[in-house]
Figure 1 (tube, one colour):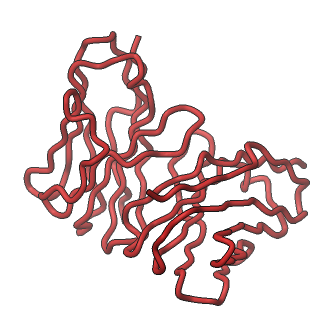
Figure 2 (figure 1 turned 180 degrees about the horizontal axis):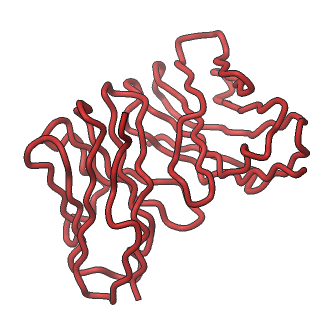
Length: 114
Length: 112
């Protein structure tokens, strides 16, 4: 069974600075998807970024980028130019071959301070 | 485009009572998921539907939980009877393809 580990329960960052959230996973599959989801306080979860394991190039979405290291089974999220609206719980998720059966980590609470 | 709708937003019941949650996915999304998110944890998949058929319910406690998606559109998740450990947020998600799931706001259940 797949497992996802987020070793940082909480992180803080100053507005406009850069922060990196860590995620490691365990799987025996070769083709799979990885995701970062954001869950603001009392609001619904939204997709931040997605990575397909067969793609060597790291995914980027505006201020969000990932460092995907397949051999190390590591999938970290970098947020550049942090904004107050980035304050949320961030979940790393493993999606399997078709990206559908999500297995989530325990989450990292990110607080952006002004 | 309307998002995934869930109701109610909050529910408080006593243990051994029954409760039902409703989800209306994004129009045209064939796949629907129910997750349980216990406080301080990531969501855990309970059941996955493809149209009106069950694809995966391996983590659904079938002695007390049931779910249906009769017409392949909206879905209901039921707990009967509820236990204290069922206190959680129940999330519904839908997807047009097999990846990229869109989540609803969830139903927060408190069992007293």
